[in-house]
Length: 183
Ligand SMILES: [Zn+2]
Image (tube, rainbow, N blue to C red; front, side, top):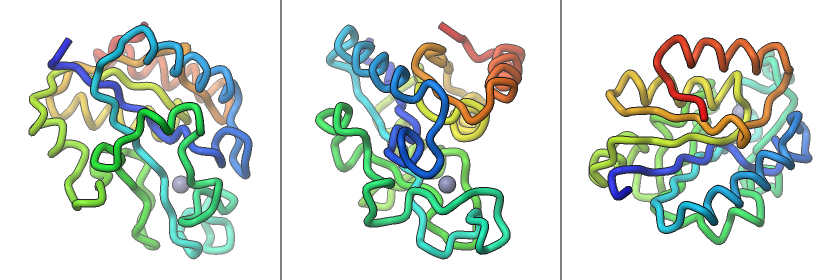
């Protein structure tokens, strides 16, 4: 499907085995690798949480989270099993402004300063398939922004991981009610 793309949200080490390790993260990564194997070739775009050390979402600055995905650390790196699929111009960083929380990857920027939404437009993508971490934060917010921007959105429910089971369940219900397809 040349008008479709896969968007991998925050499959980076701090959300897998690091300071904010999420439930089902290893399974979500393995299932994503398998999904890519079955659906290749297929443009794959990566979103990365990528914070300065003094980011406002960290507890020391009054935020809700422990330090995570700090620029230049292993915790901010894409999982090694997915890294071979990550092209630099299709990797989008978010959360780089120390004063702003950014759960959605929609306005994430690549090295050239282009946003995810802009690049999807240039690639003439209509359908986006989303997987990643965490369901109730960055997956939910990214999926909702893409839906609002007019894309057809599908979430791979075996390829997502979460902070809490209840929040995961509620986020899936909310997405379904909004018209996001869950498969
Ligand atoms: Zn973050």
